[in-house]
Image (cartoon, rainbow, N blue to C red; front, side, top):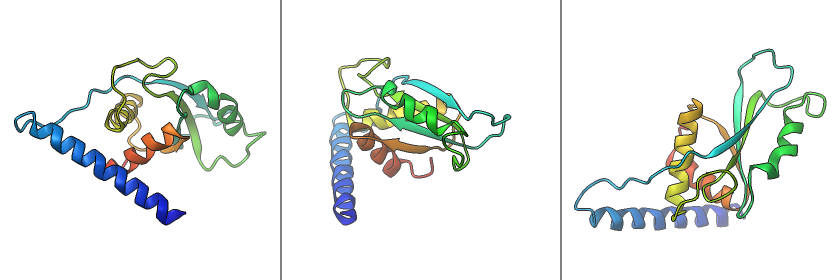
Length: 152
């Protein structure tokens, strides 16, 4: 299973690279830029954390989902009485991907668009790096993000 997943992710990355390469050649040598949108993010803070800074988690929903799909999970995760060992998490965010929930709706929703959105989200929230969980479409966005920005 792991080998199959690695092959699928690499194949997807190659398709993105070919798409960007062919798009940039048609723009007369200009660098290809993807327009990001400001994703809606619902924040959950660790209860009783007394201002202690720790790691941040960003959770992305699946196709036709929204940030509300993860509300009860993240509320429980950030509550010390239901999850006493949060692995150093101080904040978590449930996001709406573009064209979903309260995030802007646009004519395009490519993998590169979603990666650009995640980079812009981290920048807007002041997070140089984060942990991610993605389900279905959110998983695709997060895997592509991780391949293109492993330092984040």
